[in-house]
Length: 217
Ligand SMILES: [Zn+2]
Image (cartoon, rainbow, N blue to C red; front, side, top):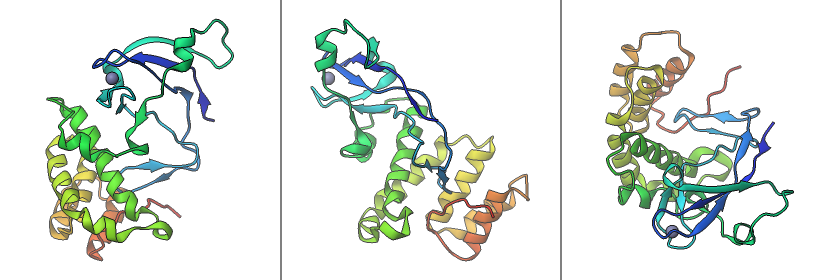
């Protein structure tokens, strides 16, 4: 069950303005759909994003960089009026997306932050074709160059010592249409019976480069 936590008040490190964001005490992935690009989405799956924009100065803001001023529940009494009136953070997925944050290199020198933003940019572009009943192939095609540049830049950021990194590495080449490279990477994958490895291999052999849902019958 997804349980909302208190509203959190934070201070923007750039302009010192106060803003708020929702928190969650727990969430679950029941009914969520998992995809070959590792995105998990579903009706009750609502993990908090790590970055947004300040509603005052519009700067990008990593939540972990902001000072926490306080928290309050909707039924708390004696909450400062200033807290109740402060504007909410602007989430990237509800505004201009992750492209700008990647182009402006708001990850700085942090490989973890760069990986985070590039993974989200990958998912954002795949969202255009993720669900067949609402696909926007035209916009997806227009963003193919950005898609490819982003995936090439993501490869060195992946942790190739674990299963996730190795499978995403192969998946990137499949989605780039380099099926030979994808199959070569999968041939080196240690567990030959891994169901995701088998699915990616089948898709690469069919020369299918589209993101796919992981479905097990
Ligand atoms: Zn600000």
